[in-house]
Length: 441
Image 1 (cartoon, rainbow, N blue to C red):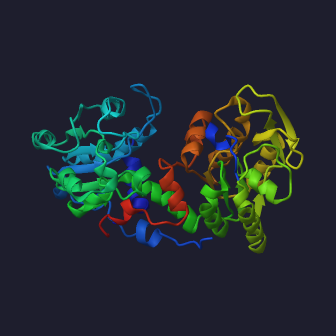
Image 2: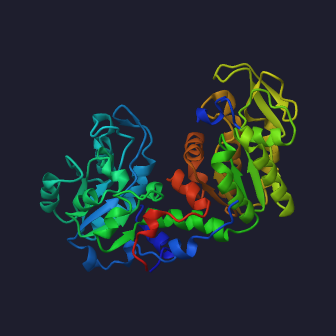
Image 3: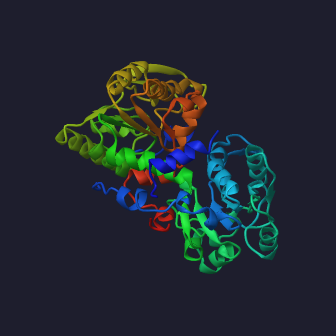
């Protein structure tokens, strides 16, 4: 079996920023290469493995448990919940399951604030079973703990990034990490774009190495939308900088019929059109790039929708004075921090006939209430279209996901991606090392 709708059926059955607009001194094509034939269709998943290949076997599964914490309290457990179906499946097959993940960015070895202990507790609650936290991710004590475990047990290894060798994919560390195990499952889409020890290196020592249900689901939606999404197709590209989104913007422009541009990057495009933008965030070095994108769209007979009105503020602050102005009439000394209401209404009409919509990036500084309406407005547009059943809506990118969750409409979307950078790179058409390293089907 390949990563396919069959895998997604198994997946279903197993389940019963303010910085985006911060003022700065400056704010300001590659051709599309479809990864689907290599990544989506040609890699083994856990559903390819027989019961005999799983029962009693020591399985190392890479999950993405990099959740936000307030002290020791998990503030959003989405990534943990998304990991449960694959872990449940392995448990049900009698495997001895050891989960590994990173959390945060430790600098010099173990730090208590980056311990995975809160994740072990929450994972245990979701599984309805005890999840023991190992004292480390490598070493004799960890090996002894795994060797004494019973079929169906779940162990969470401590933070892999307590070792700098993890991100360096250092062979000696990789071998130690893989040593206690019989096979490997990658279910961490959020880190699949990194060639780290726990995402790519261990595949050299553990066979078989296969994908989990979450990884398959992410690839099916994100890769499937870009390479074969139902038309008309639209992309919503937001965030602060043209420089960070230019590759994905060009890729999506090749594949989509319509593009909505929002967020701080709007002002580089408005400046490219000759408008004054006050103190709004602009990448001067990318004004010509913005012009090239608009010219490309015209040549391809594609439509780019920019905001017609802007909510501007006298300073970057949640309590700033605000006013709504036309996008070609931003006053000196004021900065744009969100779409205006007319823009949201135009976006609703613009997207009304679309059958596939991909959102990557917010429309404004949604973390501040005064500048959240544009982002929540477009989230509601997508959720309403998706609820009618005719439109596939895909939310990819950390800020987009956070805004969708905050809006309360996440459940109405077709797919919420767990990967920020991985989502972006897949939409750009890049090969993800963590997927490429898995066994061919």
